[in-house]
Image 1 (cartoon, one colour):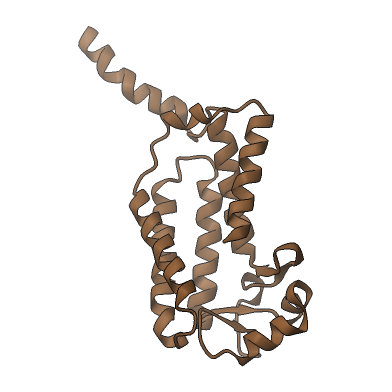
Image 2 (tube, one colour):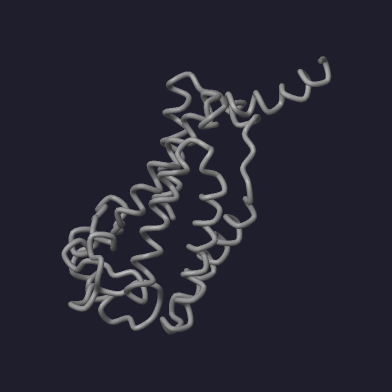
Length: 196
């Protein structure tokens, strides 16, 4: 969660550096944002209930990702959301296929040291588990260590962060719509018809 906040802060800073303004968000309509809020609430709740058995938390964890996939798909017209959609979908597939998100042992050791490996290995709960021999789609699981944040992320996470950052920067520059011309034409159409 802290890494998400850091990504957003950096994105806003870059947006200001390239001449963007917060007013750029005023003309952007985000669809079905309630789904994103619901998914966030579920994931925050799961962090507080991480000691519950994996069979209990896995359903809500998958549901939260499914809600985010729907939210991202509904907003693919916005800059960066196609990348966000791809990232969340990859995470959802990896989680569903492995009954939780596997975390690579070596990556976890690089990010948190041997203690991090021992802690996750001792747990039989939560949404993540230490990588096993029978895990599949390994390339899409948590295999990328981020030592400064002491976490391990997936390719899907990286895509999601990049897409979110790209959306913030483009929106601040007034280019948040992928096809802004189409939006303007849709508003101008009735005016031309009435004039005719």
